[in-house]
Length: 219
Image (cartoon, rainbow, N blue to C red):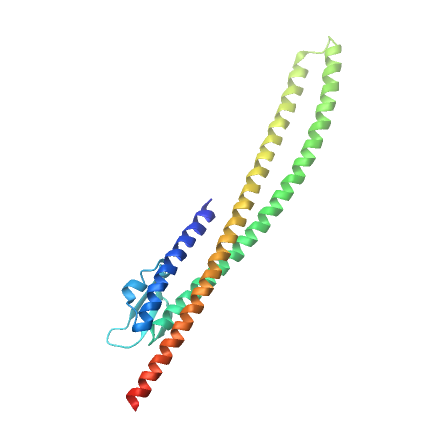
């Protein structure tokens, strides 16, 4: 299913992003991070982060329309804003999948109820048809065409019942896949929140170091 494949890709991106974050954290400890390496992380796909020409401001833009996510003199602040937006998008996807799961479950219940009605109708029809066929067989005057028509109708109902059972089975499979997607996306959301908290901590430490440097230079 497409949603399952998407969640798997997001999980791989997050794993790669976690590895990249280690290098990022080391870089922030000893100085400004190498943006060419940090921004290669798959988490930043769909965004462009660059430093204004001749200026001190860093800016993050969305690749889809070029709109700005935010600007700051500190690249860490811009990266945190991008991660916050990615996290928000992930939460929206979780909500969408949960809504789809609810709608799909309602459809499964509806088809299950219809299947039960069809099964009862089919049994009643088959009982009536068997009695009718027995009566027809007993009456030699009846033509065999009546028997053929009744049998064809019974077979048609059996085929319809089999089709609806197949629909119920497929819908149940889709519901299970949606549950799996939601679980994986929730894991990704948790990891993104942890990563954002770590980046916020690095940003604060970097800010503190800058203030200390300013104080030393001022003295």
